[in-house]
Amino acid sequence: MTSRVNSSASNWQQDCAALIPCFNEAATIGDIVRTAREHLPTVFVVDDGSTDDSVARAIEGGAEVVRHATNRGKGAALLVGFQHLRDRGFIWALTLDGDGQHAVKNIPDFFRCAESTRAALVIGNRLTECQKIPWLRRRVNRWMTRRLSRRAGVTFADSQCGFRLVNLAALAALPLASDHFEIESEMLLAFAAESWRIEFVPVEVIYKPRTSKIHPLIDTWRWIRWWLTTRPRGAAALKILRPLQEIPVAH
Image (cartoon, rainbow, N blue to C red; front, side, top):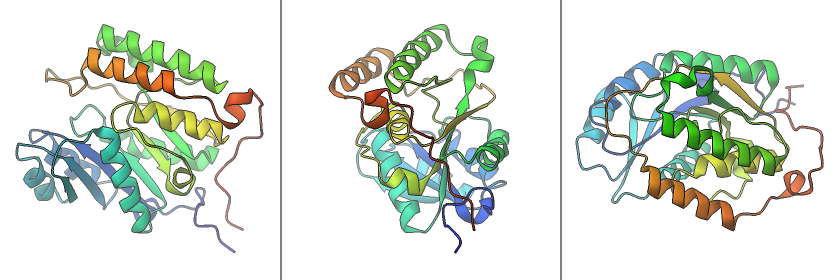
């Protein structure tokens, strides 16, 4: 019997789709879709209520698009996308942002990591080039990462990077509900609580002179509020080191 959540024998172009949440990214989304399709033929964009030409540019680039009538937040867009890809039969989702801050050339590194480690979640680590990250964002990232690591009982490298390879079968059983940027933290703790293997790969840091969709005060406060209302679950809550779950090998 062959498992449908096998990573070591994955046909990535068939089993994985790129997932891009997008809000007012008309200047970049078309090029991102085109370059992502050099690695993955299926690119799915969730437009989160954009008021510019993001939808048209994404379609021109070759993406499949679903559109929210109003801006619901990055987390809501990702959850819609994950459900859509599961319904389509994909095994993996490769998430990246629509603002051009993730180097698409790093996509194969995620595949190689999943194949060699059988991780269920592979996250980009930008802190290997931390000098390129704006000072405030770097400090906030490290502050959040330390707290998440302590709660989970494991060491995380970069907890806030949205450049991720996610196994959809592992994700499906997790109670994710965050609508905004805290989705990345919630996902990390949920995978850790279920003892799924999590790995990190170095990725190039790209910061362009554009207005970020992250609002430092609002989003940090929202994260703190989320943090205070969550409680550790499973192995993370009890600080019990269970054997790590790995994506099964076909047999």
